[in-house]
Image 1 (tube, rainbow, N blue to C red):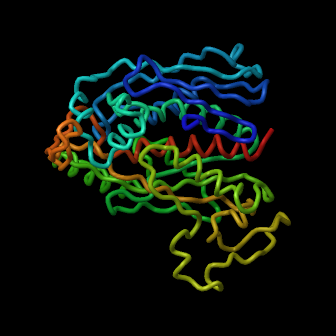
Image 2 (image 1 turned 60 degrees about the vertical axis):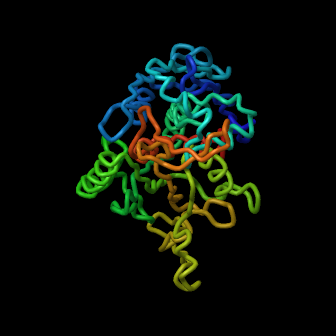
Image 3 (image 1 turned 30 degrees about the vertical axis):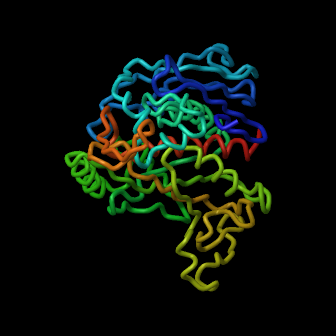
Length: 357
């Protein structure tokens, strides 16, 4: 099923639509006996929550999860962990015209064909980024379990509207924790330039996209499988489930096509602790689909928000005639800052599933 993130050990089944009474998920396969810090979960979810800054949508949602099962006194009990998050600030009438006139760049038209016109158009229905809130809850839980195992996941805005942040050091991935900032960048100066670009787009009723860089440290060598079930495969499958993701590269990614083997290879050495490491990390910590023991490093391309206030060309599905469209409603001029914790969350779910218990 399209709404189920399926792993070897963990499954996350997401339900709801952007404007339904509630959204939520059921997490199956978590180990029993793990203490979950609810305050840490809430803090992680606030990073994604809408309406917190002028750079996000004006729709405000508390995103306070109500746990229905799976926790007893804050400890996992082995049963599926089920929870819901109420939708409290919807304006469905803003989307009435989109049933007949699909938004360019959005899933409106393909969804109309796929579901025979019965799809929920309000807020984008189940194609909305609103459905990433349950993913963040699931990811926040998995992050806590990973940290107990010495594995850390962190991400930042690598690039936005052509402005590039300082990248992670591919060898050390210093624990800079950009996600703890309201605007998740390593360089605050670069962040200010990015904010200016978002404001320009907002003032012109437009939007901008960007790139999220994510790093995982602490994963041992030897995890994964070659060919069709490698670590890259599993990450790609799940990350492309995040709305608006259009590209993914590991290590040097497409840049390696411009290099020679002598430049792109990662030479082996032994560090001061007697551990085999590489002097470079051009392959992003994965070789042959299997972890090398180096930091896992990848970048995710996020497209500009498709719902913009500029007049655009579309068609009327009822009259089958061309029609101009101006999208109403409340939309992010840039979803990249809020996508950072979502990428961390999906990565954490995937890494915990690969690592096992």
